[in-house]
Length: 126
Image 1 (cartoon, rainbow, N blue to C red):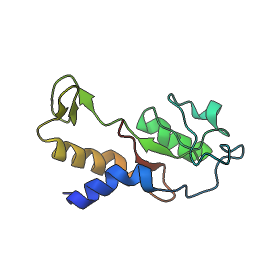
Image 2: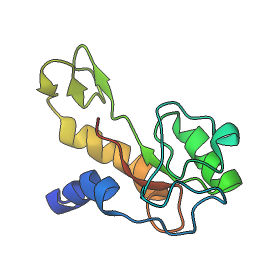
Image 3: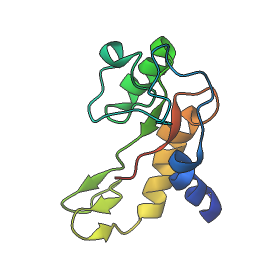
Image 4: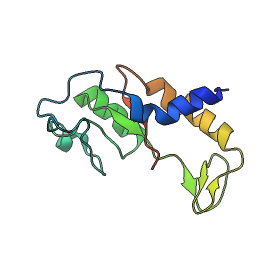
């Protein structure tokens, strides 16, 4: 089980981390620390973005291994109703059991790929 402090660190790591490698050759303008956009097509975006946001985890892992484009994990699961594994119920907030759902998601999909020299740099919260 993740300690509350670890969950807080996980939630905030997208705000607090820094790139761990030089940006792509045609990097974002110098006044921008991160350059991203909604939608994600790493082969077409390489060279002008330095942070992936949308797309399946497998696409983000491939973007890192092929183009050295790090990404944010997200979005966290949401639904119109609370079901097994859903974290947010749209229009209502956190689902019962959200802590266990978040811990399972973090252990399986986020933490193995999060950190220096890895594909994920944080979690996109919304």
